[in-house]
Amino acid sequence: MNEIKVEVELLLKLAGERYVKNDLDGTIKIYKQILQQEQSLDPFKCFEVYRKMGGVFNLQKKRPEAIEANNKAISYFDEIIFDEEALAEWIEQKVFLLDSLLHLYIEIKDYPRALESIEQIRKIQYQYHDDYDVIGENNLDMARVYKLVGDYPISLEHYNKTIEIIERRKKNSKLECIGMYLGMIYCEKGEILFYLKNFNGALFWLQKGIDAFLYEYIPEFEEDKDFIRMRKLLERIRLNLN
Image (cartoon, rainbow, N blue to C red; front, side, top):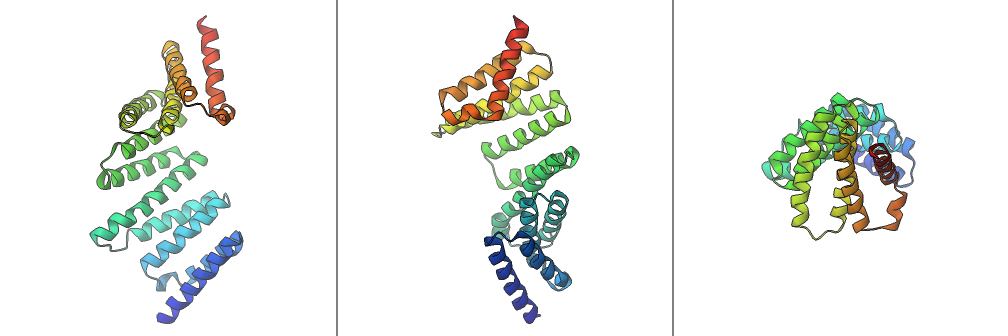
């Protein structure tokens, strides 16, 4: 058993060296070599290998493989027996994997599973965090996925919750970027109202969002594709209302 542990550590070190050299195929090959001994490895080591493998597959844009590896990593994570202090520290790794799965599911348009990932993240973060930042991010993810699904009324509910939370955060923050961040959320809410044919409401929130961007003006942001899209939508609504 000790020989296996030594061999695995050497292989992990070699995989790391391949990764640094951007030899992603070589890195995956080594991880698969390690997993040939999967039944002999403890859950933590399997978690570590699958977690890293999922990250490499993600870089290679191999979405099905990344999804499978991330789910395997989460499965092994749940087998690990942590003490309370260690779990509080390591649980963020599970959240990171779930967040990775969330975006992978969105990319392949598997929105039900994307929503499941958000719910799992929400449960963990509500247990280990009690701050508005976390709750706001959860609601924003929900708003965006429901927008992709086409359930605009539910999406709007989550945008409203997000705005309430982040505006409260902005009052207690010295970070200038929050205004721009909030500006994009205002614009996204305006877009949802446009889909719901509430054109006056859409006009109000799109203008409010763009004003927030321009208040903390960064020249490069004028070239941002989402910012450009929102400005075009604003002009389109104005023409329709006139």
